[in-house]
Length: 337
Image (cartoon, rainbow, N blue to C red; front, side, top):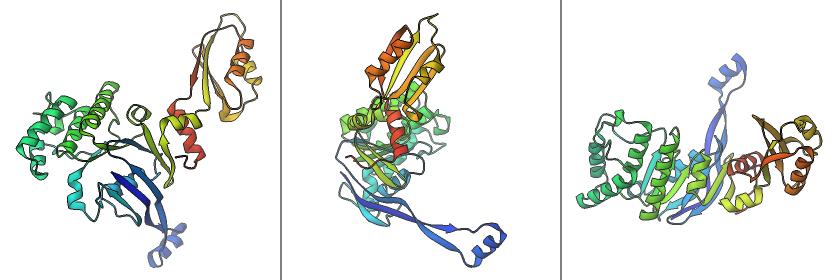
């Protein structure tokens, strides 16, 4: 469905020398350099997949999405979606995609939501029969009935996000781009949005590219992620493979028995791990030990802990995906496919 090959996007950046002299010089003899916001990125997404497209701020995610949606033209490389070039075939292409940006809306602010959908029906040339069928499905999945008669400006953030997702799906797009669809929402609304995305993907076979900073979105919706950093792809593969390769951190939780003389300082002194490989936290008498299990085996850490305290409520946890991704960002790993 989506084929991205050696995609690159360069921008011209003006170089300003310091001080007043530099400012004056810049007016008459400006200097500039080309900056690669996206540098030779390739990936492919089959029909019906939900792909997590992630990376830190400034990594190049938004630039890639803008090229995929036809807003920006690549400096070099190519991208085709359902056989169409997003910029060369723009008029035909926009009828096959839906786009939702978490901080922006495509809805008319003062129109009742129902009328907004009527306008979009005409814009996308959706037949009366298809529109009625699609609205029935969207009402069921996104629960729009409670506010479909209200002006958009009166909707809560959660209601507006559901309304935006519905608007992006009215014309049955082949591909749906979701940029931070759960940002700023409470837990219940986030869960409703995620369930709706999964149901839409299941029933419509819509291919979804999801950009998000919410780790829960990734874990619940995506079996595969593409991660970019500093304009380059640093990971493309499954969450399971990511956890298997980089999930080396473990967490040991325990509560010392009262009066056994447990000392956090003494505990730390006896551990050879340093820096990010070891951390001890005290949360109201419950201790959390995060440690690198490649450098100190789980059984060795457990034996050591039991030699220092008669602990109770002992729990050992694997690293969560947030910790793994944080380590990936810092290390800047190569592709592992």
